Image 1 (cartoon, rainbow, N blue to C red):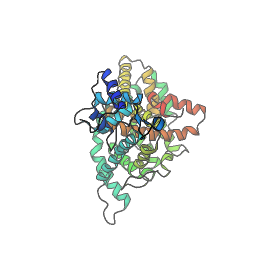
Image 2 (cartoon, rainbow, N blue to C red):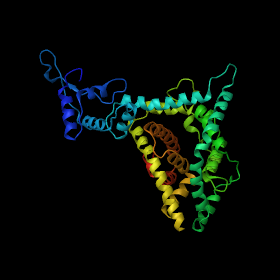
Image 3 (cartoon, rainbow, N blue to C red):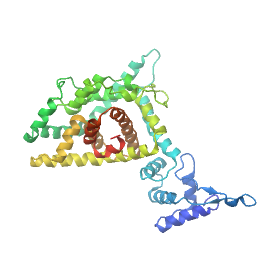
Length: 381
């Protein structure tokens, strides 16, 4: 039973849900409004005429009715309250903003605690770089094997496309934009090591050269990589988004850590941007599987088409390889994984948008062609 008799507004919400076949009890509404992290906002109150003795009346917000219905349909005994908050927010329902930000921020702080566990305690007299480097070594040795199967599928497609006569002019054209094709690559462990260094230290932990080597490792030694060459030689700073001081700081991490920048987005980015990023993150896995399958079908008949064009242009210059890896590695992400991915996408989009602000119309048009469709709402195109 509820602790107090339900208000008129709550009775309206309960009736609204019942009309849609969802049973909701007054006590459930109380639990959904309980702290911390209430899932349901309170009913707005009015004070009609300030009658004698004060008195107020509450009225149900119509948009909250759909949230009540969604919570009634999706709540499970013992289920995660955070997952409910993320799911309802992703569905575009009016979950309280403080709850949304707190839940998103906890996804980042959880990653920070995991990173601190990987790094281990900072010993007396140990240099910061050595401390982070030792932890990155452990992280790399555990994680490198996870991407092997995913990489094989992507590399198999790249190899088949490289061998198709119809695409030979494209590869020749791309090769002309990659004068650094003989540059040294990173192996899987090296990519993981430098990723950990970059996450921990941000711009202080990774160089332009390392980013280029990592980009080359994604495609392999026999593939032209104009995108990597641009990173290695373009006058623009590829780490510009990390040069400013993040607004918020996670305990124990270096101030320059990428996680501090992402944590600040969770707390400060407009809700519309966070929702667009959540939607984009939820599109990665189906897009990756659909694109791989479509390209494999075109390879099977020996006729490269629209899917092969999207693949090759995105792989050579855009984000495609990293997004394909993520989508194939996590085909059914949990709400927490989708939240972390959303914040990562938003952070990357902010960096791209800084570059687009200085680009001409042709540059913005090229960016629109290279970006997967689900990323375009995040970009200033």
